Length: 102
Image (tube, rainbow, N blue to C red; front, side):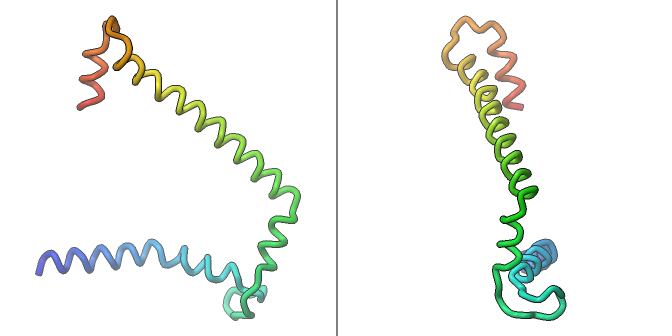
């Protein structure tokens, strides 16, 4: 009984968290200007969004920054791996290992 209550609670919490997101996704395809009245399925708002030059510049900037940060994190993440696996004379190897494993 206790496991069933936990599962029901989990489902209700996930529904509470994800229901507003799903409603926004569905209503983003609404043709009407009002969010209350369903005016039919349309991609009009997305066409307006992607034809806006300011939005496209922001999207480009976001993708450039994300790509740079991903590349930088990948390089910085490989340094400890190289230190642990390839460098036998790495003096602080034991201290790094103990801080990571805890």
